[in-house]
Length: 140
Length: 140
DNA sequence: GCTTGCACCTCTAGTCACTAGAGGATGTAG
DNA sequence: CTACATCCTCTAGTGACTAGAGGTGCAAGC
Image 1 (cartoon, rainbow over the protein chains, first blue to last red):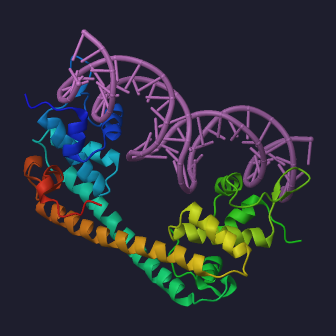
Image 2: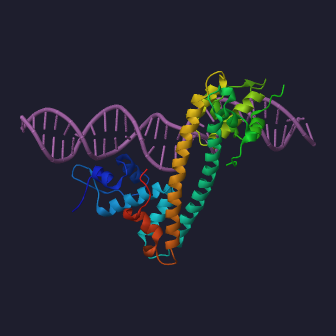
């Protein structure tokens, strides 16, 4: 009971239909049971898993990390140290990303400000990109 | 005079050797002249173009946008309005990205904080991801 | 019962921006 | 002259999907 089609699962989870099938392909979600006409039929547990995945993807976890988290979730009797480590690593990554985006924002603002209504050869947008010396942005 | 090999161009531009060849393939840089032994031979102008590209990539411009900027650069007599528009669009994008990353950072911090040394079933890292209701993160 | 039309099925190929590897040629230092 | 690094071309792989072709299932209206 309460079984739903892939389209309904998609609507309720926010994961697109082809993406759900893709997740099944790569083994991120189990293959669900099928109807008489060979159509996938999802249960509430599958739906929760899809929502979990969508949410984690939105938070920028990559599929490998999500796979690790799902393994933890499937066996809830173990320490959450691993989950903690994964989230912490992601946090460090996000903080780094914010720092470089802020630097980037400053540089873009300077570029846009410097660009009046002149010709391209006076345009800072081009100039800043061409001249490596003016670059305040950290290298990768 | 002042012609250099692809390896030297790579070192001086910071663009990896296979990536330079890839850029040639997709027409982002012109095919350079060759040595007697069929090896690519780059001039200062090529080098400047590679530095321009690397810098733009680091700033997160995609290849299509870079192609547009390079076209502008190749014809410096036109208005810089297009370059300005490209940079502005990118700026808006970056600001949006920073906002969502800050929200994400807050959420990750809450997750890590909530994760004591308990078992997985008391762990906020898992819980937050599983329970969509606790999500404060905007749905793109 | 039949048809319309959407949702479903599988499979392959395409996307972006590279990256890795095979297998061979060239260039340079000792 | 022999190592050895660097170069060449080409194909295929990456991640995380997305798009399309070509076909089947299912519910509703007539």
